[in-house]
Amino acid sequence: MSSTSGGELLEVDDLHTFYGNIEALKGVSLRVSEGEVVTLIGANGAGKSTTLRSVSGLTPPRTGTIRFRGRDISVTPPQEIVRLGISHAPEGRHVFPRMTVIDNLMLGAFLRRDGGIEADLERVFKLFPRLEERRKQKGGTMSGGEQQMLAIGRALMANPDLLLLDEPSMGLAPILVERIYETIAEINRQGTTILLVEQNANFALEISTRGYVLETGQVALSDAAHALRENDDVKKAYLGI
Image (cartoon, rainbow, N blue to C red):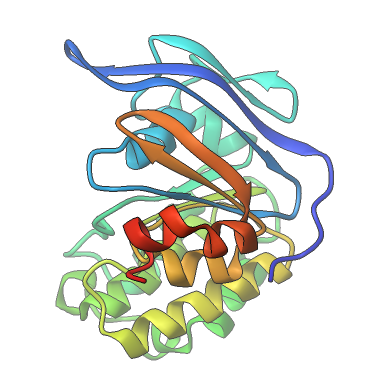
């Protein structure tokens, strides 16, 4: 279970986000409090990834409001959102294949001007010892699990207050999924708030405080994570029970 939540960190109100003429989000609203792990679950095409992309500025909403620490960031450019304290590890990892592990990680700190970069690099290496072992290896030659570690590590190098994780278990062997989720729980224990998108609802809800179920671009259900795990509809649709 994640750490105790504090004040409201992220407030999303009535988001309508489009890809061309296709409305992907149809009024999504959610809250993430300081210290929480909040999970978005739902079928493919439900709007989970689009919600993260809207928050990080990659696919800005057409209408609706996104506030981070009370500041409206609905039309803020992505690089400025990173500066404010939100970092995004996207679906599909998107590591830079011809760059080394260390160069990929340092790109995550590109916008920083503080003196804590080396300490955060050591933090990433402690969380993911494999990355330290492979620091000079090119990202494109690594396994899927190693690339996922690298994508999360790169996002952490921005020193975010809020970490957006999109499908961190996708395509990984079960033993690696378990390892990744142990590390996500540890990242949260160390003080980083997390908004998580995940198909593997069992793992996600196990480490989460609360969850939202998205269906066709709308929030169909929201509750405490333990309550969602016991909900019969959620069990049938997303937990394989």
